[in-house]
Image (cartoon, rainbow, N blue to C red):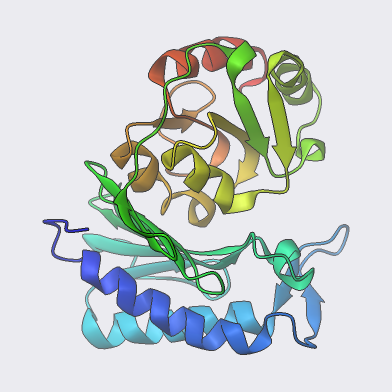
Length: 263
């Protein structure tokens, strides 16, 4: 699908560089490091190599741009254009051999999400958006992405990565919503947001996100007609508590229930 944004084609360049670095390690024997002293936050050689490859492409092609990446830090963050990279979102799925991980590539222009891609190189899928439109490319062809209509929590399919991410008042607010929904599925990571854009599910609720977990997904959700904010209805750009919905009417109802757990 075409976009008038001049930097959209570069998303494919970065995705290809990441795929070349990642795929030799998927479902192979690889060492896993833990980034947390108390807990488990895995990282692999594939995460690090993919981000290194993408950063090299950015620095070669657009040396004046900034970069914020999960594995290798930040550079030139005061630039007009800042690339926000998560080389493997869903590392737990990756090390388990499950194909529900993705490469997240986002671009902020003057501080706001501008274009983004969730790529899954093993399956060969890409979900891309520029805030005004969104599209899919993959094994079932190329097609526009459009969220579906769902104006009630009772009819909604809800996704989240793990219910244990919610604590205290957050958990109370989330659990009250989950109890009302038609169906809930876990362990979806970035794929959950892509499925909202594709019109397959209705909402995602999460907390504890970083900017690199969400910036790439905002242009896809918004471009497909959905809404993505923090739990108080503000921008989701910096991560934290995030809620995404395919239908703005559903989003307002979710915000009302999440207010008790919002910080």
